[in-house]
Length: 287
Image (tube, rainbow, N blue to C red; front, side, top):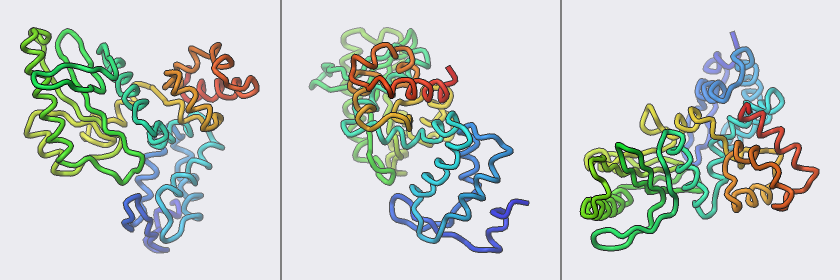
């Protein structure tokens, strides 16, 4: 039996979360994350044990993530790229606009026609709307809340404010006949989490919440995994400058990078770097 399964007999390791709290390290949670990334089952125990022998009391969860990624990268570029998913979203900043575009892509993958960064007149005032997603049955308005730090949460004040905006827009859509027989739905999407009060109010008021791990099913992480939409910020072969360059030119996904590889040199990506970037993008996406 793997040694980490006897950790209670050896030592209890307390790790520091992004909000500063110390909690016992959950090796099972690490195994699940590795498995979801595509790591082979036969390799899980060995990778976790390698991490086990390098962790210490007070180590940050961020550093544990880095250790696991370094090990996983040696095993599989594909799995490592998937494991970087959460960090790749944080790397979309600083403006938050690339996150809005990413959310729009995810709605498109689910069969909606999506538009990002819209200015729409409500019944009372004009609103800047992050994402509008439509199909024959539904019109969805999405407010995106992007955070740079994992510990940040969107609170009930955000939910209250967004709900008032959604109500103003819905009244105008009904007045204009834009909805027709379609259902109107308001979403708040974030790359982190919401407070319990925010979730309670959103649920009670009829809004939908999309967070990294909320709801339990059909959350942001599951949407991304189901879509196979992997971000260019997950590429270890691309420098921060190159990633920024790609995002500025509306290349958000690895699949878009592959499709537009002939543009890369003209955009300013060094010729010597292009094959490495394309190879890694193909490995992550399987395209």
